[in-house]
Image (cartoon, rainbow, N blue to C red):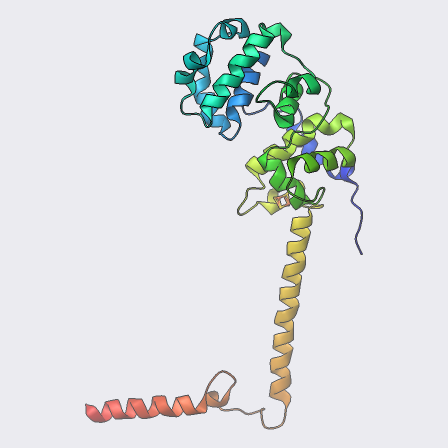
Length: 266
Ligand code: SF4
């Protein structure tokens, strides 16, 4: 029988654990966050954090950036994945937004900017303390949420919709980030740390693996009974060592004769 999980209740410990925890990108204001979110797509937060200080020293605001061009910013981000397109998008945004205070803080306007998808927009809204309009679904969430069983599939958009349906809107901002942190720290692609995980009571992946272990245990038990059964049958009760299952009487004889031959040669 499939039991329906009360997800809002099941997620309470996870939401509590990561409540309000900042995104790993080390930004100092919304302008920096917007630029870093674009740069971090298909790259690592750690890498973007390492090059951010030099970039923002040269381009401290949207206003300064708007007077620059893609070629000027490329030397600062040349090791970032897809840096050519990203430099064009960043300059295009700077020229249209012009000043930090004009950065839009709603999902529709953010996603209208080049290089900003729903995931990036949800990150910016959450970090800016705005009301959630969706759930952050990064590569960690794509792995972890289906494991837990709250969603099905691997399409980020469909995963986001399922999360929005399963959980109340007031939790959306922290939900995606909490799942992302869980994926980064505990539910790694290989060897997830089930024992220390705050979701292990409700996690489908964990439950399925427990069932597998139980089956394995029952198979083991069946094998032992089978062996006992065989031993109790007439003629099997007092088998000699070389007549036990797995030992061939014939092989034993061959081994014995080989040893005898060897001794004779000496
Ligand atoms: S219980 Fe295991 S599989 Fe489930 S979320 Fe936690 S670490 Fe991941």
